[in-house]
Image (cartoon, rainbow, N blue to C red):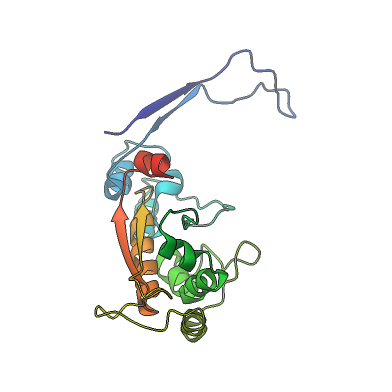
Amino acid sequence: EGGVFTFERNPYYWKVDAEGNQLPYIDGIRSQVVNDKETLTTRALMGEFDYLGERASMKKLPLMKEQEQAGKIKVLIPRMHRTPIGFFLNLTNEDPTWRQVTGDVRFRQALSLAINRPEILKNFYLNQFAKLPTRSNPSEYSVEKANALLDEMGMDKRGADGFRLAPDGNPFSILFEVPDNSEDHVPMSELIAEYWKNVGINTTVKRTDGTLVSQRF
């Protein structure tokens, strides 16, 4: 199930630590890509894995802490410098309607304003293990401002389905293709899609194989 990567220690590696011990300390690492992310924690509790890395989910933390108290595992939550999920609008798509909409910075600002990041922190990180961005992206949440920007750029009319039309009167929608990299990626994307639909942007989430996403990207 998934690919297996084996890394062996180089016995001739030249670095040593402050006490003169040659690095690395371990003889090797065997890393496995697991397609069914829901089974990761269960398999780790059964002793199949020593370390879950960032593929684990905070929603399993109560179970993991319970097993830690029973002496079966040790839970470590390291500090990580990353965003939980990154997504990109294809600004060079050949569709003129798509280019007109996504090329307008007000549209991208509206999408950002529509995302309720505090709710994401609460639902996915228990308000303890992540914080709002300060430098990578504005974190303001305002449905009112998002709607105002979309109206201002000419997306003030809606189709029969209730979603906003592009300024040229054509339907507009976002296909949100998401790789299942962790237990959180797809659920978080689905929540973001709901935020965007809440301001009238028709958004569909499609779970897509990571390799295919890379090729399409």
